[in-house]
Length: 164
Image (tube, rainbow, N blue to C red; front, side, top):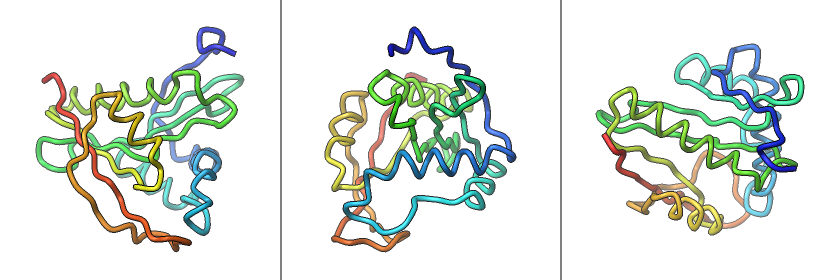
């Protein structure tokens, strides 16, 4: 199925989306099971993030969530942040992740951000390659300490200057 065949709509997440968003994020992050224990998030955390920042969701097929991304457009002065980029595994490879990154960048830029940051786990080497292809570069590391791990890992912080 190509993205041109999908009827995708974009909207801000609502508090009542928290359970479905948590399911989507956890499904998308199951790939990390080789190095972490437990689920990536829960509905309580998602609800808090919906209230304090913003999640953008991609809907399709009678409001099924195709993807989502958390955006904090002005996290650190003149820079934005996005995270929890999630695409339903059955829809991956169709450009939806790239679409969500571009939306996150546009929202940060519209709010006055001159750059955007994100974090990936060093063990997910494919993510580093993918984000570099979108113009991101590595700028540092940070401890990975928010979930129990099966093997040592850390965050790789990535950064991109925006056109503004």
